[in-house]
Image 1 (spheres, helix red, strand yellow):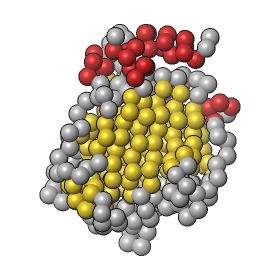
Image 2: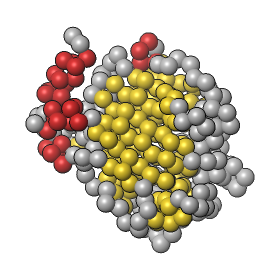
Image 3: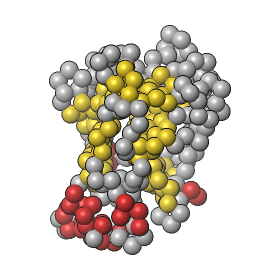
Image 4: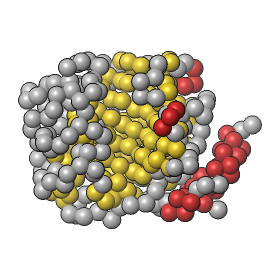
Length: 300
C-alpha cells in the first residue's frame, strides 16, 4: 500500500467527529508588529498582569525587530498554562509550523529556576482525546530541547518524545511511554531517525534567536531547526513507520511560558525553584502553512 493511499484511508476515516475541522485556519503568518493579533488571543489560566504579555514592542536583542514579549510572573503558582500564553483563534491541523524565538537567559541570575517555554499545538477533545505536538525548553539549561507529542485520553495518555542536547549533538533519549510517570521504552528503526546528530556550535536557545519548526502529517512527524549561520534545515527527529503517538484531529497553535516545581532539566536536578525575576521570552514570528490536499480531504 503506497503512502498516498494510506493517507487517504486515514483521513477519510477521521472525517467522523471532525466538527472543528470546518473551522481550520487557512494560513498563519504573525510577525507581532502590532499591539493585537489577527490570529491569536491571550489564553492563560493564570493572573493577567500589565507586564506579562505585550505585542508590537521592540526587541532588546534585535532593536529593529518588533516582537511578542512574555514575562513570567514570580508571584504566579506553578503549573502549565498559568504563565502568559497565546492560542490561535481557529483550529490548525496537518501542515508546516515554524517560529523564531529566543528563550530567557537566566544562567547568571538564577541557574536553578524551574521554568518552561512551550511552542506547541494543543487541543483536548472530549471524544477524540488529546492532540498535542511540542517543542519545550527548560530554561535552566537552554542547550537542551524536548520534542514530541501527547495523544489519547487522560487515563491512558501516550507520549512519544526525544530529548536532545544540541550544543553537543547528543540524543539523550528517544522514547514512548503511557502517562506522565510511565516507564519509557526506547524507539529503534524508523521511529528513531536520525540516529545521530551533529552539534550546532555554541547552541544556546537563550543566546540568540533561532528558527524552529515541525511538519505534521497523518502518518509522520518531522521536527527541525534552521542552522543560524547557513540557514540549512537540520532534522532533529523524523518519526515514521508507526501511527503510535501521531495526532489525528485538529488542534490549536500556541506559545507559553510557565513555572514548574516538579520537572527538572536532565543536567540539573535542582532546577525547580520558583522564578525570582520577570524573565523574558521574545518571539519574532509564528507561521503555519497547511498541507492543502490533506486538509481538503478532511473538510469535504
